[in-house]
Structures are given as C-alpha cells and as structure tokens.
Amino acid sequence: MNRTDVPPAPPRRAPRPTAETPRERSFAGIPVSPGIAIGPVFGTSEAKVEIVRFKIHAADIAAEGARLESAIAQSRKQLGKLRGRLSVLPEESQAEIAPMIDAYIRMLGPSRLIRGVKRRIEETLLSAEHAVATEADAIANTILATAETGQSAEDRAGLRRQADEIREIGRRLVRNLTHAPFRSFTGLPDGAILFAESLRPADAALLDPSRLAGVATEEGGTDGHTAVMLRALGVPAVLGAAGVAHAVKPGDVVVVDGSAGTVVLNPTPATLASARRAVTAFARERQRYARLRRLPAETEDGHTVELQANLELPIELPLIAQSGAVGIGLLRTEFLFMNRETVPDEDTQTETYRSVIEAMNGDPVTIRVLDWGGEKDIEALSLAGLVPDYVDANPALGMRGIRLLLRRPELFETQLAAILRAAAVGPVRILLPMVTTVGEVRQAREIYERVARRVRRRGERLPERLPPLGIMIETPGAALSADALALEADFFAIGTNDLTAYTLAVDRGESDVAELYDPMHPAVLRLIQFATEAALRMRKPVSVCGEMGGNPALIPLLIGLGLRSFSMNASAVPRVKQVVRAVEIDVCTRFARRVMEQSDPQAIREMVAGFGKAG
Ligand code: PEP
Ligand code: MG
Image (tube, rainbow, N blue to C red; front, top):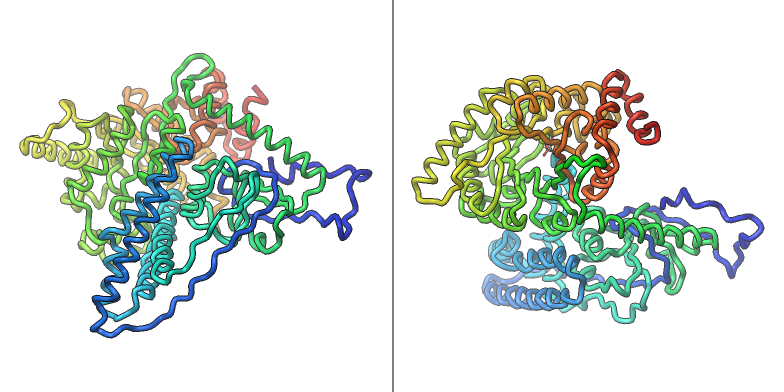
C-alpha cells in the first residue's frame, strides 16, 4: 500500500506529539524489495578503512604480490564459508544468491580486476591495498560510464550490478589486506529492522530472512547486488533513503514499506493500523502469485497465451525459473561481449548459450544475435577494430544490429556457429535485431546456412532442422514491410521499445522529451497491428518482447490485436498471467477494435485504464 493511501488518524484519538510521543517522520527512498515491515530499529555500521597510499620499492614487488595472494586466499575462504551458510535459506533464495557468490569467487581468479591490480603493483609500485582500491574504482567507473549509455533499462541495471560486484570484491580485498574487521550481525533481535548507511551484498547474504523484518539504508539503488540479494531473501527493503540511518535510535518503532519506498519513523496509531492491514494484504497477494506460477497462462475462455522471459544476464535465470515463464523469448547477448578486452570466441559463447538452454529444461530459448550500436559501446569490439572508430552524428540511425553483423561476417558467423552448437541441448530460435529490409534477412539466411554446413562438416552434432531464423520488428520500416518480411523470416518479435522511439522520433533515454515516448500512441499501435496481422496471415509466430509485453494494463489490447505470445522481465510474469487468466478473447477483440478507432493517445490511455470496468 502506498503511504499516500494511509487514512489520517481520527483527531479525537491522535496523541499530540510531546517529548514522550515523538512526531511521526517519513523518509522517501528507493523501493527495492516489496513488502511491509513493522518493527524496532537495529542499527549497524562498519568501521571505515583508511587506505594508506604508499609506494613500495621495486625490490618489494614480490612481497607485495604475496600479500595480495594471501588476501585473495582469505577472501576466497570467507566467501566459500558464506556460500556454505546459504544452505539454511529457502531453496529459491539459495538458487538466486549462490550464483552471485560464485561470481565473486570467480573474480578472485585470473580476472580483469586481479590482473589489473598485479599490473599496478609491478608498473606503478603501488601498495597492494592502494592498487586494489584504484583498479576496482577504475573498472567500476568504466562499467558505470558504459551503463549511462546502455540502451535498455535492463542493460543499465546489469552493468550497474557488475560495477557493484567489482567494488564488493575490491572492498573485501582491502579489508583483508589491512586486517580491518567486517560488520557483524550478532545481537540482531528477532523481528528487527536493520538500519545502516550502506549494506554490502555479502552482508545482505549473511542476513537470516526468518528473523529479520526489513532493511533501510541511506545508500544503494534498485539494481545493485544488495537489492538483488534482499529481493531474493524476500526481505522488505528501502535503500537510498537519505538521512534515515542517522535519524533513528535503537529500539525506535518504524514502518518500512518496500513496495512504496518509504520509511516511517515513530508511526502514529493510525499509520500502524494501516501498515498492519498492508502486511496482511501483501501476504495474500504473495500467496496468489505463488499459486499462479503453477497455473496455465490461459484466457478465461480457454485460449493459451505464451508468457516468456527476457534475459539480459545469466544471473537472472533463477528468477525466471520462479516466475512461471515458459522459456526465454528474448536473450539479449550483449552481456557476453561487455566488460572484457577481447571478443568471446566460439567455444566461450557456445558454453554460455548451452548453460542457459540447459537451465531452461526443454523450454524454448530465443537468442538474439549481437545488437551493437546506438549508444551501446562495447570495448572488446572497439579494441578488435570490429566497429567504426568514428562517432555517428545519429548513433540510433547508424550502424546498429544486423547492419554491423552483415558488415562484419566474422563476428556474425562465430555467434551463429556457437548458437547452432548449443542448440543440440535444447530448442532454440535465432533472432536478428534492427532489420529494415528484406535483403538483410536473405543475406543473413545465406550466411546462417553456410555456417550450418561448415559446422556440420566439422562433425558437430546439430539439430536436424535448423533453428528458426526470425527478426525483430522494431522500426516503422520493418513494421510497414511486415507482409514482405513475413515471406523471408520464420517468426517476428515486436520490439516495442525501439519501435516507439523510432515511430515517434523520441530518444529512449532522453528525459526532456520523455513524455512524448508513448507506446499507446495510435501510430505505434497501428504498426503493431499491421505487423501482427501480416505474420498471422502467413502463419508465422509473432510475439511482443519490448516493455509493452510486460505491462499488464496493455495485455487485453495486445491480445485483442491478435497477439498470443509475450516476453517480459521475469518479475512481470505473474501479474501478466493474472490478467491473461481473467480475460476473454472476444471481449479483447472488441475492445481493441474500439481502441484502434481513436486518434488521441490520451483517449486510448483512458480506455486502457478503464478496461474491465467499462466491460
Ligand atoms: C525493443 O526495442 O523493444 C527490444 C526488445 O530490444 P532492446 O530493448 O534490446 O533494444
Ligand atoms: Mg530494440
């Protein structure tokens, strides 16, 4: 429940704030893990580490390297112990948190971070702790700079999480190098709410969700590892609430609303009563969603709708398993190429695709080949000289997606070969990004078939029938040529994010024109309708994999336009399924017909908001 829904306390019974009854205070932060917690404050802080920035003598390089190695070994041991402790958590939480701890442990191996630290010690004669702090900062800042230009919110979130990982390992190494104590949670009373200036992901992994009611911090954001951990643990949490940790005293009663992002200190009786009602309502909603996971995505009148998940980073696989999604409708492969200095070779790519396909246990996986371009900069591609070294005046209109792949067949062929080899372990489809012409699909198919022949000649086991080759419909040009493209492509995935941007000439990340970015604009809807009908006429599968597909309010309209397949952020699946199960196809079709008669986006918004109420 949102704080603004809280009814005011009846004047008769509201105590006047006195020295004994302190005034209610509200803090706004970032809602990172839903749920409402009511409980006493438990404050924790961690002593800051002072890094003495000294230089070493050249003769001491080996000794400094040995100090680093011993801190690495100690960190690895601590993380191994932490991983062992996860067994007390519910299975689902374990499945989400264990891969993150594994990623930390891997980073202590021959990673970019450790290589960089060693280089700094040798070349610049920095002390090990100074080298770790500097290198971790440098890598994290580079990743964050890339994140700023990330195309989708998911890309940006993934990169911010990677920056978090690097900083986390950096901090742990520095603590071990300087023998600084780690935070301890001993003495945390049952049902308490943890308050801290900041909380590290590994701290979050140490928390016992059966004893902890909630978390509030002054630093941190939605996409960081700490947030992911807290969500995995199911602990209501608000991060980034400025001033909150300093405003509370141990034992104060607070309400943390992890759905609305608020922290209320010294709640009035009315606020408390309302928070208790919200706790009950939230528990009921959780149960409903958990039940939904096992129920089919079927409309009220018995039509099956396919609900799949979008995947940006393998770390999201456990979330997908929990969501009830049946397969991956869009695997964005950019993550494979990011934060590394070299382009991943065929074997590396094959392994990654294989592990994703295997994790989906026979459910289909649609792998989109590299969508480089726009503002998305991938260092490894620049270093390998595979992408233009000039800056386009209009990157969104330049060398993007399939355009680059056709220009750089070696890049395309390696990826296709890897996907084909991985396809031996489960059902796969291949998706081409940013297609605008029929010729691009024909050219791509020629390359695809040539690669398949070559891989077969090498003796690799490939599926008898090659995986379908489909295209993103994400430009007005593609949508309006959908009838011709449907003759060439095996399936369509409608990318409503770019489609909206290109149709309305609005940059996806430009805040000044953000209010013009409107997927409910009739022009966007007409293009979706045209492309969908073209696909259906040609009996080609068509899905929506942009953000519209995960918006429950838009599902009746999209079903009414003929769509029966949606791919979305895993967390949206239960809410979308709930809508699917409540609608009838005929009602949706009539509704879509009425919507498509509108010319004003505002009228469409009102109709969409009123669906179900108006009938
Ligand atoms: C889209 O454009 O809608 C889409 C799904 O692709 P991306 O967000 O990766 O550009
Ligand atoms: Mg796109």
